[in-house]
Length: 505
Image (cartoon, rainbow, N blue to C red):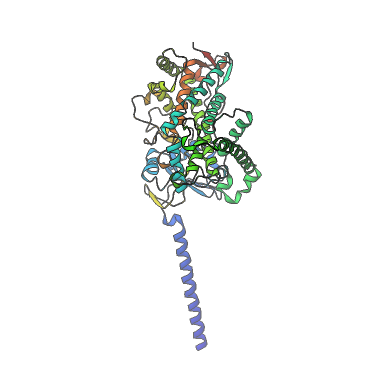
């Protein structure tokens, strides 16, 4: 009897223990299951392992807007194993970029930029923290301040003149304006950043490969167990090659600058003709603010300037001229404005640009319709937060579909039409305070180079339409211009802009 009682007690004890263990495991599973404890934003149905990756296609800003029409302006998609919050309205964008900017100001570590940019020591892709704060401060105060941008005025005007002269040499034959704009912005950025131009084919190809690689999709960044795909496809090899070639180039540039400055009295040296490498070397030498800037950081920041200052700027000019060719009545009105301001002089100077209200409206309208980065650079939440009634876990990726904001029919009348007049007598601007129009981002991670980019845009467009009439070849009308786009790091024209340029005087 006692043996049976002991057996029953043992069985009962084991049952109770197992029950407690099962309840504990179940309770922990419930707590760890985000769908049972969190009110997540609506999501499209996903596939195992790849999530919604297969749905994004070659123009994800279009696809994500279509999804948002069904699931709402605050939507959670899954790119592989990565949850990604997508904002498709100005209201949601303002909550993320203004109200909760500090929570959403981090950058995720992405494989390709991390490899190219020396472990993300740059400004654009650097995770939020002390290093980023110091480098952003250096950029704003020393590299891209209003005064510094004005000091490079002569460079912009000289390179614009060179472009205009090259077009004149075409003697009425077909001109590839897309190539012209890339050369213009590349030469300006080279002179500003490095002190000289690199006009050779090798450098041009290297820059093109950099832009291509930064716009490529790394499967391993979103589906870690498929990282081998990046090796098999050659993406990893090409990334390493581009990183190595740019490192060798920039290492040579730094050596040239350090050799030039050796023995120079830094305090007595003229600062007016310094390029950006000179300035960064001064910051490194003087340990501004007690912050040490190493060589890799200098190289990463210079690469940032190339990526942001060449491709996005040339693309903006390309789309603006495309719209002018397509809308000859707008072109004629702009030509009347620039001709009046120029008052017979051979070229438009930067001092003239402030008087050109219609030019500024055209550029704003171009940025609204053809934002260079349709999906702003990814952010990442730093802590759990409730956003508009939804629970957003820490570490969630965040994307703002700025292209969708610029074409929202509830915010813009005839939202898909090119109408520069909408910006005349309007306070709307692109500096990050109007969330339906944020081509340069907003908040802490907004682009610090707005003034630099806009100076090139305005000067190039003003002089081009002042000097030339532009027409499509074979007698085609502007309405026949193909405006199809293709997306990489930026959204380009699918085909180059080929025109016949006729001198106006």
